[in-house]
Image (cartoon, rainbow, N blue to C red; front, side):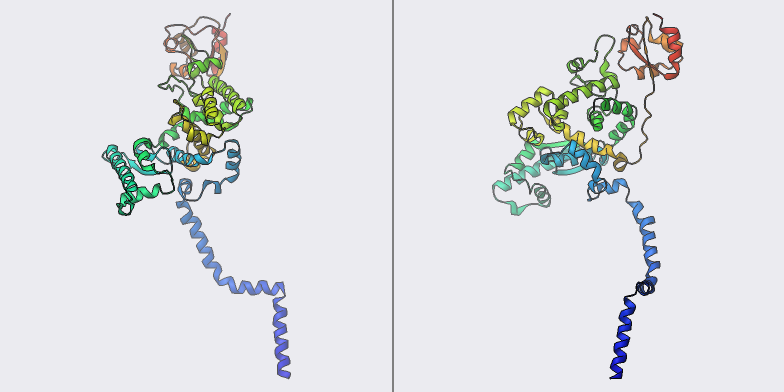
Length: 429
């Protein structure tokens, strides 16, 4: 009996010990102290050796979604600029075009189902792109034949790989359409995009101020990444000009002068003001940024026609169903290209690595009130001819080459330190 009492007392004592917080801390520390050194060494190895191998680009290209790292920013952005379900793959595709693949790489893909990418060909190491085009079109035609004849059990390795790319697409004619209508090539743009980000530094600060003045979303300043890559003298085959790529009729409608001496489409800041007013007007009509931005490219009347024909304001459905004669590949993809570019610009170093942007253009404005030629002006102001031309891109060649004088009452941009001298010598009424 005495022995039982002793065991009971000892058991009770052990239970009481484990109810004491001080004892528990000491007991746990003694048990774990042999593990501190290995845990410390493992942590040190991860931080100093493993993590540096996963830079920003590696994280972006990993399977983990970017939203994991900056969900708040993307959520707010996508509330303003929503991505229709039908166009989700399009945005992912264009982000890779802008940030992953260079101009030496050509993407062979399906222009209707952007998740279908046949191959990315490096033109530096491959003999020619035509061989790849023939290869994949032949595979697609063969898949169409085997599907119609119920011979899909006899696919080659390449055929099986391409078949798998299309397995979630229900269209029974998907292979035929892919070969005859949807097969497309796209060169990577990473190197060009990096140059565009550098050039954007020249204008970004003033563009933000202009769009803020009109109470517009800041991200709209990245439309030039889709239009011109921020090239001030950009000119399209359709006749659009400048950073914001205005057509002549639209430019005049929004207050930009075009005459024998001046084309204000080439003034990035005047055209930015006009672009802001155009976008604001589009939004007032459509109450939708996907449609307002598409209308910047396709025209307000064109998008109104698409909305009327498809009977929806959903750009995803319009992109899939609208059959307008001029609503081609570029118009269908304009909004998703903008969204992809804006996504990248939220944190371009994550996608593109360190980039040093050009410093903002600095100048002061002075009115020209007397007859003067550019050659005389640069001489008296002691500035390079190229500096004056760079600041005043809207002046046409005849003016820059001093064949005709600077237009009367033209507002000239000159380096800040030259304003006082100009007013003293060249601004007499």
